[in-house]
Image 1 (tube, rainbow, N blue to C red):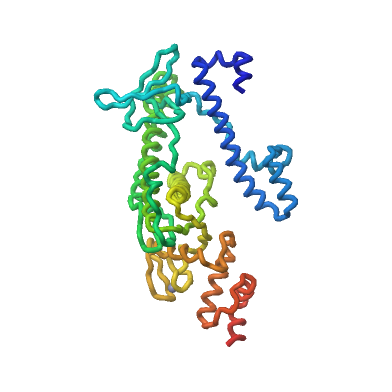
Image 2: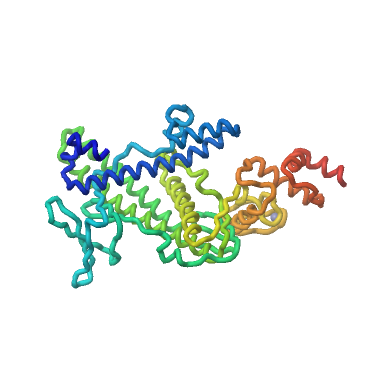
Length: 420
Ligand SMILES: [Zn+2]
């Protein structure tokens, strides 16, 4: 790509030094390659879901690996779905190689970054708001009249990576009021609910005001007052401030969730959790509903935090099937009545904290002989039903293989009577 642009003169239109655009091209190509690789992970999953035939699977895996997926209709369709593409975000950013910039601390202790400008040997100096000097390849972005400096850091060098994990097995349930609740009853990230609801209220209020302004601008434009319409669109309907506030809010929520997961990992060598990535709905399907969009997003962040923190601190993350974990009583297994944050088990006559009960159920799923990660929802219900029936008639557990469990679940009373 680089050589072709050099040869045909495309590069003269970029208006930046050769080194800068070459690095940017290299960076963009690396991004495309990374997106391709992560799409292939998803498509491999889709292949295993599609067929159990080993020959057919092998054929598709090979085609995918050798980049011959375009000729297979199923693979091509899957790649189109999972390979992110089509949006260029590089109009306001540039990549600077490690040997092309330097950082200096001035007499007042402020950190300055110097990068090559458009004129030779003329560096552009940027004051940084941080006291930690960036390292490695930098990405500079111009956003709302400010410069953002992005760079990679090695997670194994982070302070939290040096912190050891705990030594127990702990179940965690993801919530909205608290980021996570563990099976000991510990609640972590207790400010999450407040952060989310205040953001949701603010967004709704702002969207309402913007809709009003937009209709005023449209009316003005219809009447021919284009100056007024333009003024409103430029001054009141911009996105810079909104984007900046949204970014700040996202950062706060992420910190709350990551800190919460760290608290749980403090005591856990094994963390048992629901696989939150599996049912993560895409942004497009959620539409304009603010609450649902926020909920889906926090779910994704929790999934990311669980994987990321476990990896860094050396704990093992175990995914389990979470079907009915929020409805079943962890003591007797019957489905209870949920009201607010309480779960009432009519059989035990006990009221549990719903989230703690769910975390205990999730923990117990890790050792469950019948309920596997991909056991369908309705089958889980039957297994739970079967267990409580067996418990009621005080039958010894003779065989807990799924086939027997299913047969019993179909005729629970008959099998119970014949054994009495
Ligand atoms: Zn119960």
